Image 1 (cartoon, one colour):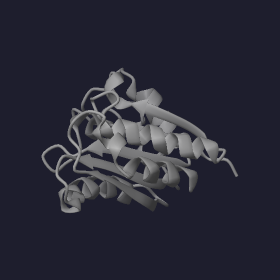
Image 2: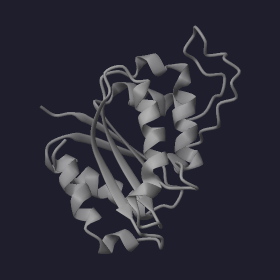
Image 3: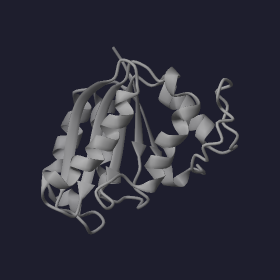
Image 4: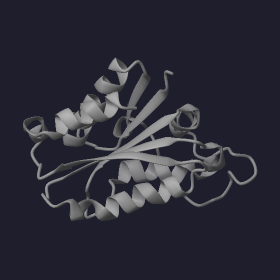
Length: 178
């Protein structure tokens, strides 16, 4: 059965290491017959949550930007891929803004399969623990969330460096297994 796969590529660096892994994952998932959309979060106009709670009860955020479109795709997908480089042992600001802004309609995000893609200059997987805690913290708020896989792209810093690692093939294979 074909699934709707939404890839939220958090990296602000177009064609950066995590973005490249998102593309490889997407190729695999498309070849497996799934409907795949990748959103480069940095290319969207998404402001940070201001905790005004205007959304309480209405589900409508007071901030009028691209988040409404992204939010609907988060609700509609079957599979959600969260991808980010490690920034000071956490996710980047662009993806964090998306997660925080989902508060307006977070209860509508249900029954998702989650995949996580993490890249870091640090070569140790331990450098990704905090970022995975952020991803899992979000998934813990999603009713029926099911973690399906983690891809580590460790020890890469320079743009495109990931292309010379086994992580490219791993991302493709993970996408094929969706």
